[in-house]
Amino acid sequence: MKKISVLAAIVVVVLFGTAVLAAETCELCGMKLAKYWKTVHKLTFVDGSQKSVCSIACASRMMRKKGDGRVTGIAVVDYRTDKLVKARTATYVEGSDLKPVMSMVSRVAFHSAADARQFSKKHGGVMMGFQKALERQREEDAMGHGRKKHMMH
Image (cartoon, rainbow, N blue to C red; front, side, top):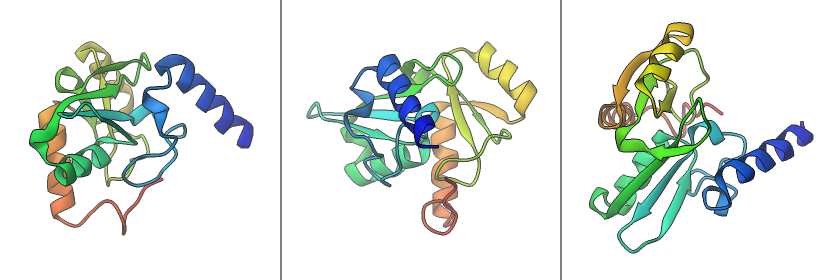
């Protein structure tokens, strides 16, 4: 198991460089980014600082904590290519058969809507843009789901 975690960390660093994993853990919940790298989000703030988080769930919570208006950019890992893409133009698939990360339902992102469509045909789920996925996460949080009682990791 330790070999798999080390190998995953090496793959993430090679694919994303050190920027995403400047912190080895989610800067909100503390989960290991190497383990959840397929759902990593990287937020850039007005002061130029960047925070890496494990999921759209933690991205949403970080944005609320820091102030939505302070976020100038959001990148997310494309589930198919493993490359960072702009979250605001990505297509998310919500509710697939994948295990959720810090939320009640899975949410993964794709640079290509065609890739998202192909994934959802195989794994289920509904396609939506970043803004809708963020709204759905915030609705879930408002109902008291997510972080403590229902952590899925």
